[in-house]
Amino acid sequence: LWTTENIIDDSIKRVRDMVGTDQVMLGLSGGVDSSVVAALLHKAIGDQLTCVFVDHGLLRYQEGDQVMAMFAQNMGIKVIRADVEERFMSALAGEVDPEKKRKIIGREFIEVFDAESAKLKGVKWLAQGTIYPDVIESAGSKTGKAKVIKSHHNVGGLPEDMEMSLIEPLRELFKDEVRKLGVALGLPYNMVYRHPFPGPGLGVRILGEVKKEYADILRLADHIFIQELIKWELYDKTSQAFAVFLPVKSVGVVGDARRYDYVVALRAVETIDFMTARWAHLPYEFLEHVSGRIINEIPRISRVTYDISSKPPATIEWE
Ligand code: XMP
Image (cartoon, rainbow, N blue to C red; front, side, top):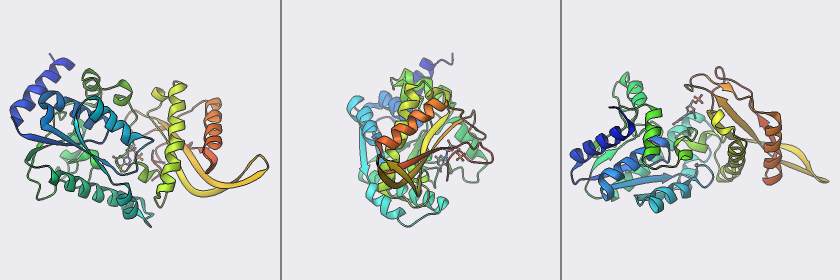
């Protein structure tokens, strides 16, 4: 019978048979797929698993600490955290083109990941959170490598000199099955059902040049938006919601003083497949409340706009 419990038991057995006493490495992004793989592998092989978590400084509010708290402290999984914010910021300095930004982030990611894994001695297996839709999607591509290290921005493949075999325990599962597995493995519901977050992170939500200053402002605005969506029970009614940083300044007033500060756009969509999406018709009272909080609590933001573009023709992300 194809129940969640059976899938877990069966996967654990298969993983144990495959890896024996070998060491396994996993790139942990904090997203659903890699998180479920981490929980599953930890259950199967315990300390033979080491996760590498690349914190590139383009994650959401306190996300890096949350990932460490949950996997390392809570679950006792070995996680190596690479704190490489500065490296990413310098690599991105001066670049304004969205595709070039993606390439830079992808390249740096692979380099950091490669360097961290080179430090781990005797690792024979690389685990990945590839799920069935990824398998179908990359079936048409020539090398099938497009989805290798998929949680790392779908770039490239395994570094040439990395002699490891792949282990992909979620390869036959759809997203909803992966989520059920996650809950059954003890991952918190709110992390398993979190909105998707792109690999390049805030790097594509800061329009144009990426700067730490912008990322810090954006994180605060995004956090307020998400917090309020949850509080108003609207989070589960939207498929993806986030804030976008616009590097333009706009005039406002606070008390008697004139201010001249940045703008953020709020984006929320409803979609089944992310190929088409309708902008979410969030209640005006909600938007009013969120905008008030953002402008009052974040000194560097003077204006909030709401994105009313659907896909197509607009994409979900702004870059
Ligand atoms: P768009 O903006 O193309 O987004 O309508 C569709 C979905 O894909 C996500 N997205 C990305 N995910 N790397 C990712 O891993 C990327 O470069 C990337 N760009 C967009 C986006 O968040 C949405 O869920």
